[in-house]
Image 1 (cartoon, rainbow, N blue to C red):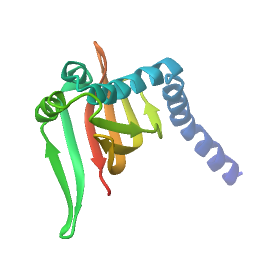
Image 2: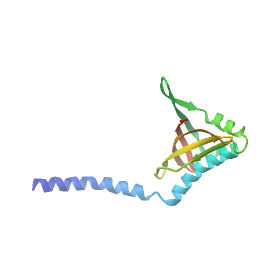
Image 3: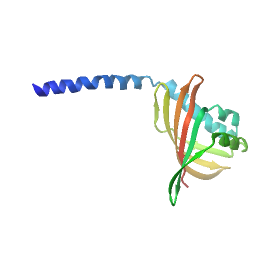
Image 4: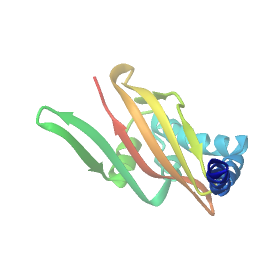
Length: 155
């Protein structure tokens, strides 16, 4: 009898969590995933076309841009200026920057999305490096925007 009561209490206590987890999961639609992917694809199209105007539209006003650097003395996290990045991209010639990504895991909440994209980067047609991008996007009134981007880089 005591085991039955404990089992019943355990099941009942887990129901609200399960219902919440399922309802959050159900809000993820194919259209939301496509919208999130489009912002990320726009970023890489803008880089390839050296289009700083399109690139600006991909980011929130308070975006954080970081790179994980593996040095002999240890791992460093380098914060980069998005403004400098956008200006640098705008100074390139078309097709000089070619970052080829694959979409890995994509998790979407009504207001936030997380996207993992392994990539290979080519500069002026030559292999430069590879790594992984981790994007955090937020859903603002004007649509999905990249809020946080951190990447790794390996030769």
